[in-house]
Image (cartoon, rainbow, N blue to C red; front, side):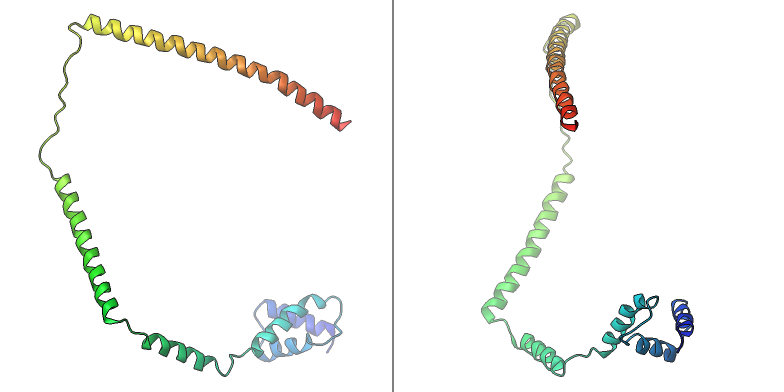
Length: 172
């Protein structure tokens, strides 16, 4: 068959317009050793499809699966393990119920929490004075920290300049 007919079939194949017979012809065609250069790129697809249609499950596969199922069925828990399993199930349910009960009790506690606080200063002016002093100390410390940060960062300028000089000399 000529290459134009095969190219037309491939075009129809990509458009999903081929019949099963035409697809079988394409698979057989691409199993040839010598193919035209423009069609060689499709060979792996059709060879793969042919290989997949030839794959089968071994004859003993079903027997192995059934034997595995029978082994799982035949393994029974001893009475001791069964009672332990039942105990664990009951303990899990009891723990769950206890957790839910305690949570419900704590969430529905009707006693309101009251905050007992008392003024520590006898007049508002005295409280203002203490707050003013504390805020001033905080502001002073923040300003000192800012100055030290700026000084530390200015020391990095020398480092960056060194990197720029080193980088420019390496590129030369």
